[in-house]
Image (cartoon, rainbow, N blue to C red):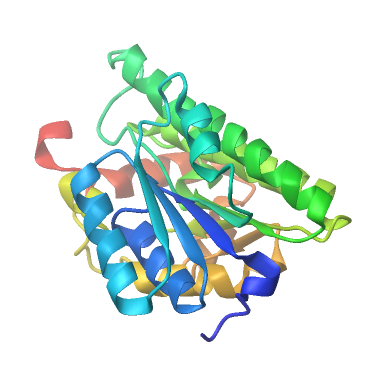
Length: 269
């Protein structure tokens, strides 16, 4: 492996929330290649089991799976029971839900609530579940997958952008808290990434000048950057962060809106 992932630092088990496809499946493959056993969490049992079997066959590690909706009551309890007999040295929180193409005031409030529940409350619950033992052992890592959307309010994804902004600030504070206990914390910020979820959303990823990352590349970058928290950005998106952190935010918000309209599927415009 080209990163610094070792069983001694981040093993012997890693938990990947959102570990069935796309970036999550790439995390699973690369962590298993480093010798870590895996616990894969995702809603859809089909892709979940396919990824688990591929990792077992390719790398010979042990893989446990749990088909679970992290927004449902009792989800954290199920995960705790599944992992109570193993030592988890790495949590990768890659689960996420988006609101592409839905304006807030006319949207489904329950659906927005699910986005908040998954991206914030479920993440907090799993960080606490696995982070506390890491603190006691004085080793481990908490890798939270963020989004470029969290740097700027955006039309039709306003809730998603807001929760991702929360997650970035949370990662910064968590990094400060855990660094003196030798636990690495990183939010790794993704831009547009060619995942099955993005394809299902119908987004146009072939716009001229649009930087599109591949899942295996961003997973590799994230694992290599795990010790360099609190926040790192996927290659090719640095300029986007610099622009979105500018001073004239009114102009930025309007500019981002015009750009986003070119990506949204026709049904949402």
